[in-house]
Image (cartoon, rainbow, N blue to C red; front, side, top):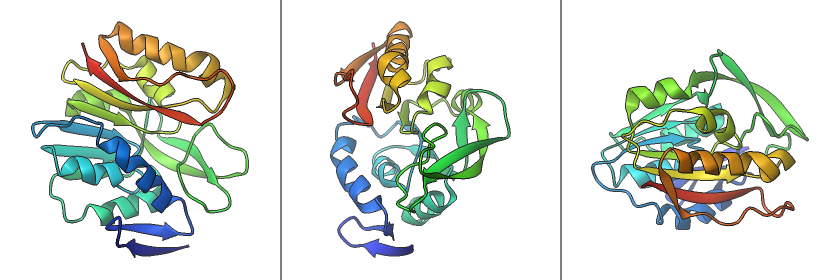
Length: 219
């Protein structure tokens, strides 16, 4: 696997990998996230820095977490020209621990790393920080999460500070229990703590896609 500069994206990507396709697909979504200059963004799952760059050009500051070292290194490279980005090479978790096993596609087609999807994947161990500690210290106004099912370990049980006005959340539904139960629990919890969905596609009972993009505003 090599790193090349993609002129269309103006980003460094890996080849062969899903980097180029993943960033291209998600750029349309970025435009739906209503950011303002005064925002402080906490991004959980920065990947190679696509949304990190987009947000940093529009807000006061971005703190971004990416646990996979090769993705983190590219995110650093892709945001090197920005002075309002803080990148952290850690996973965020709900409980106190020092490390977390993650699994990536064993064929090398890096797209995301999950603690839960293990089939045909290679195992790695990454450093972690506690999600509640990070969000309480930083007090973001925008929370952006794409952490391959990690939202159920973190956001489902977190106390979201009053500073958060917007949540950009990718809800993962690849596992049966997520699709049938846990995704609905997370949606209900967000409503209980005072958020309302701007974007919330239906969750299909039978697996058709691995995730859905949702957007939540504090009511």
